[in-house]
Length: 104
Image (cartoon, rainbow, N blue to C red; front, side, top):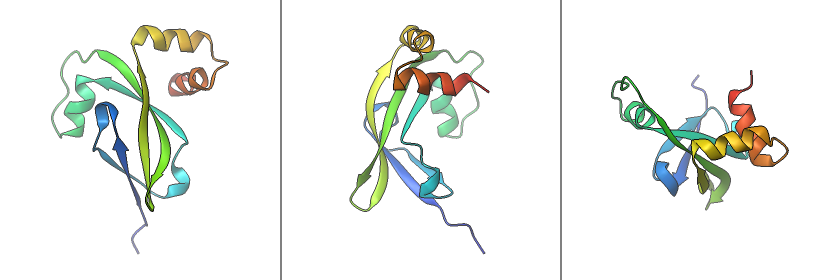
């Protein structure tokens, strides 16, 4: 028996049009941050990693609905410096989100 999946489309921002598959809609976080770098795009298109893939920004998406389907809508982007500022001020929702990316 195959496991049911949920496909989610990203709308706007650097990952506009990308579709990701989750095991179920229950697994969809409300907000997510995605590191933006050349390597991320290379991996999405089935290419090998570049030797030095610098992170250029972080794209933030918020879960929503598009008709009957789930989607993630682009809400903002920030530079690595701004990510560092969010890290140190972890009292905002974005700071907590960014910290969760790196905490074990």
